[in-house]
Image 1 (cartoon, rainbow, N blue to C red):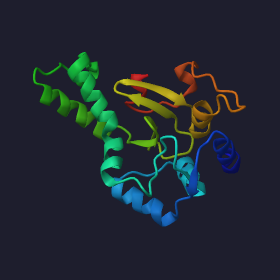
Image 2: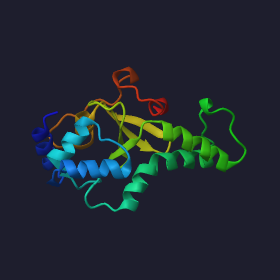
Image 3: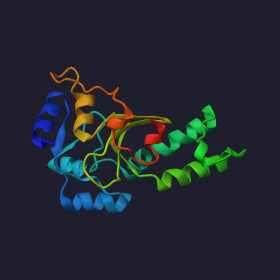
Image 4: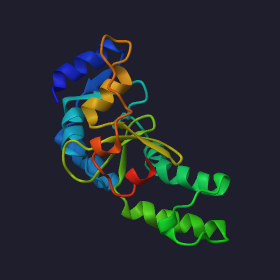
Length: 186
């Protein structure tokens, strides 16, 4: 990913940046929240930190706000369990008690790759710990691929209407990296 090119086209789309995160800031965020930024997301955030249009301002956002973003995928699953009778077959029989159903979902999310908020309800999985992980749009159990990787996502989200061609999101699933648990929703 050409970081300068990406920053330039995002600025043309109206994204505002602060100076990139330092190595110490990255390490502190990762220690606090118990995840590692994949290499491409880490490089992007260290090059320049986007702070507008729903991006996560890792310097300024409070602990409660970041915690809420990290728990958003689980809470969305619970919402659909409670309100839309959602249940994955691999979880076994649906319990009668809602609290038991939530506990089963919580355990499944805990062992799944951590989803790191990127912008709004767009998330990148922590693992595999390598560049090129996809970006998911996560809204309850409506979880879809929104980019093959970070660069593709940014083009999809911010390129339309700014002189850039938006990538086709209707590609077969085989064109996207499989991510344990989360891909099963797509």
